[in-house]
Image 1 (cartoon, rainbow, N blue to C red):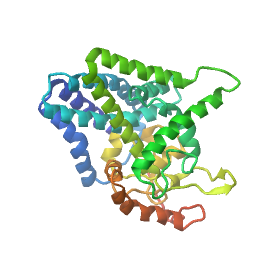
Image 2: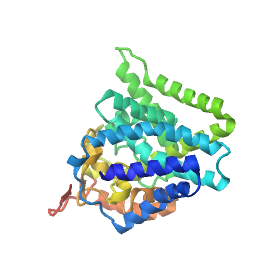
Image 3: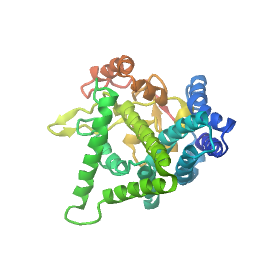
Image 4: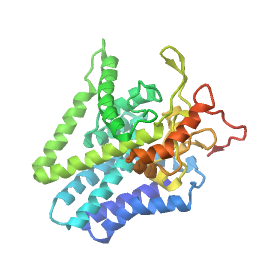
Length: 350
């Protein structure tokens, strides 16, 4: 139960640390910021996955994390805005909680909105609403997955595009295109547009936090939501940077395949993020639950470092371009489809 151990230990440390402060809070920050990085370096590749041992626990864990999100977020806001923690503890708690929301919360909500069960999809959408990013529950499956690796997708970064420019374009573009996609689905058959629920839910969260904790709590809440949104945009930026599907006819593109997303092989951060770094297989099989996502190290573009490390590098565009432009151009150079042919020795990781 690798995923449960890694994620629930972090949630327990974070919850206890926010409640009591002291060493537990610093341990939570160290766990997500340093220990995960160090273990990724020590054991660069994950132990063989055994999806059979994760089912049905894969669904149970995802639902559990979705439900834990609410007390961790709003209890964390109360703790960080209240008088119980020292200023250094509040700074540590803000970073630790923000990283948890960005790496675990976002990844889990993403998993939930792809599930077939309506209740699970609604739980995932609710998590995004509490992060003031509800439109992602529409834009991600209905825009990003349809147009990924083309210029029609606002969340697929272009070669040479810096993250800060991408973030503005992607946030606004996904908001707009998600609205259009949902409106098109309801044209002629009616139904309430989900953006009404996203907006009402966000307004209720903001009003509730302000009523209970005043301006200090509201500032912490908005700050945490922005931090989580930043990490989601970083994930999209890193995992699709410079990769494009070939246009096989005017307005028609080759099918989405294994070669259209960047992936990371490090096992501990992947466990924390519910296999989100195995991104190519997710796009090829959006309904495949996270324990079963597979990694083909020969056929899929591989990042030089773990996804959280690459996301940090993306914050500095010159550093990012030094790391990634050469690699992205190499994938676009050798094949008519924009990607090099897979070697005959390709092996599929479990």
